[in-house]
Image 1 (cartoon, rainbow, N blue to C red):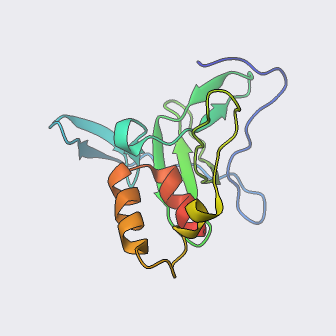
Image 2 (image 1 turned 135 degrees about the horizontal axis):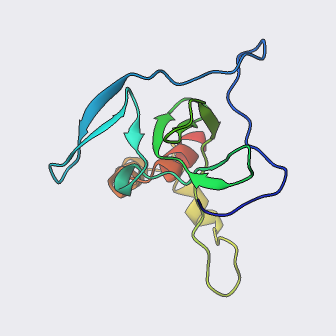
Length: 147
């Protein structure tokens, strides 16, 4: 548990008709880069290290929990699906970059040149994309894909 929020619960993912979606209880084995094997829900990854996405789930008691498993869906509007151990519900949210803040001013700094390097017409955009891929930050990859 991370903390408690009074009277707030994170909504579950629902269909267009309002039916709650549940994750299937189908598990598979995932082998990490260091050779360890873990049981994870099918098509999901453990929400750790290179696959980490900041995603907080608020349960019906108002307690905050980190998602244990995530699935990133890269589309024209990237999103992340999340599961918490012991909770049958499926959660989701739009996926955006997690900003790194300057220690003194607490807001990200982007100048015109920085933003121009993200455009597809930038002559070295393939180098920028390769660098972002190498960082293995799902939130950053999603944000640049939207740009």
